[in-house]
Image (cartoon, rainbow, N blue to C red):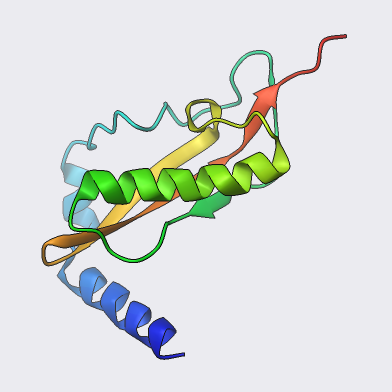
Length: 119
């Protein structure tokens, strides 16, 4: 229970220091090489009916490690739906990170997809 309260306090603290949405809309979108363009399913693929989210355990001192942990956590959930799921073929994939001092925690969200069965 303390863990949930601490996580909520951290996220509220991060939200308090985040730039207002109006300023964020004026800045160009950040390029994220780990995430494909958020669009429909890749050609020849079929997708699950809802998105999954992965975050990995705790905060990491490296944002790259935090991104990898989030994607790996998402992938473990996605492979339970489709054994051949891959982050690169996920529909509407998004990778967002929050920072607390020198530490970061990332959240990977996307709809798992896999190749359509041959007919």
